[in-house]
Image (cartoon, rainbow, N blue to C red; front, top):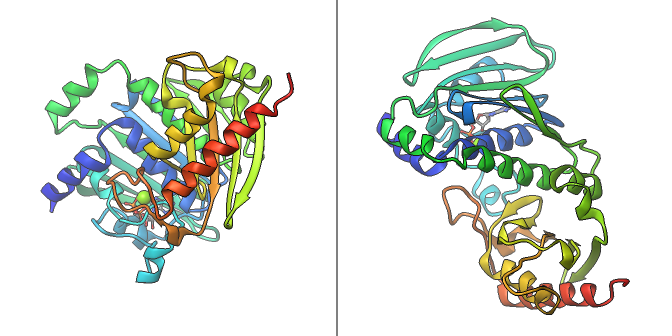
Length: 322
Ligand code: ADP
Ligand code: MG
């Protein structure tokens, strides 16, 4: 069982940034409206996520670390039309297998409760005081997998990966207040006021708002909202093209390419746009169950979707004021 969790850990929690993602998505599933993230030493010493969500009762707090413990799937029908972010019940078990965890949680009208795990064993539990919500602290990440620890330590990009992940989470949750503090320093925060202008400013900085193009289109009950930065704010990499489907950040090579193609005649060679596309569609047209990190999404009608996205981007760029 421990081994299975460690294998799962290799997929679900390959690096500190993926743990940040799993914890924050759990907070969002728990209806948190404010989530504060604290990182120490690139996440290897500590990752702490504090939310004001619905919390857990004592029993659920302990069960949360069991593999395939999920409170989120009730029926097969749910799986088809999945809207909550987590649905496999693997993340906490996997994180636990490669770290030491303290979980504190409190539901409304009840006392706070904590559990502390080391070497995947419960070593302490009891009552504690905290606000309504949940606080999960992950310490000493990969302490028992030296090869992985060494590999991550040799990477200079861990801090950047955490910030990138924060950006995605922030952009895909416009109604949630999020903050990121790294080594005691507040790095970024958002206001949860459901305003993409404000969000883009917090995430990308002021200059992105200049000449920003916003479009909203619809075809066959698929709603597409785009925030297109001016071609003059182009990037050297594709990573600032963000796709969201029903509020979830996704990756899809074809759709990303259709945005680039839409920009094509407006950009210099080897430059990529900064763009955000929000797609709302019936979840039955999606297949989200194709990757352990649940990022890669397939669409039933992908070529049609690509065609429209390229068209919408092109039209919006052509009709922008000069
Ligand atoms: P999943 O999210 O796929 O259900 P996880 O391993 O991420 O699986 O979490 C296991 C369970 O722990 C969740 O289903 C949920 O019941 C509970 N849980 C985890 N994080 C939180 C949180 N921040 N607030 C409330 N409940 C949580
Ligand atoms: Mg989860």
